[in-house]
Length: 217
Image 1 (tube, rainbow, N blue to C red):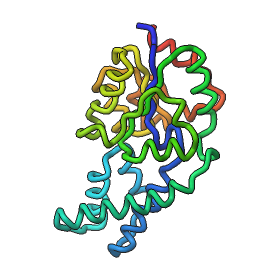
Image 2 (tube, rainbow, N blue to C red):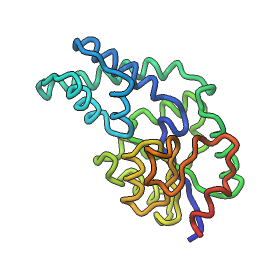
Image 3 (tube, one colour):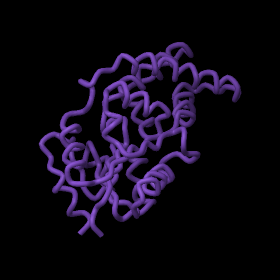
């Protein structure tokens, strides 16, 4: 089937917000009295805020009541929002705007499929919101990746079949979600980590859309 739509994860694919997530989680860990490394943070890629908090607490060997967890998750989000509200268009990853513009010229539909509950805020802040036909984020799904719900919702709203979509992801859980939903999937990042994807690229700089459209053939 011909490719008709492109679905993008947000963090680490379109914009570089991973560092702000890390800073906010690290601040929380510091306040709880343990060290949270960037390597530990890799485990949080592509998973929900609730699961991210659970992983962080596992790292620190901390057990808390559910009501305390909810307060900590909300506090982390407040710290994260303070960081991302200072973002600028300079933090859009290299090649993304040109790639999105080429997709628009070619008549392809585009969507964001992200676990982030702040996707719209981020896209508005970096002036990218108008480049996407649909935004499916953590506010609209109940199941975290590797469940394909977020991508299936995006395809449904775009009015296309999963086999007509390419998902762009930088996390293993996201790659698995796309595969579970019968999407074509391109990994953004390390070939060894994302080896289940049909294709892996380091980023969108100097990459043509034609590189990916052959996946539908």
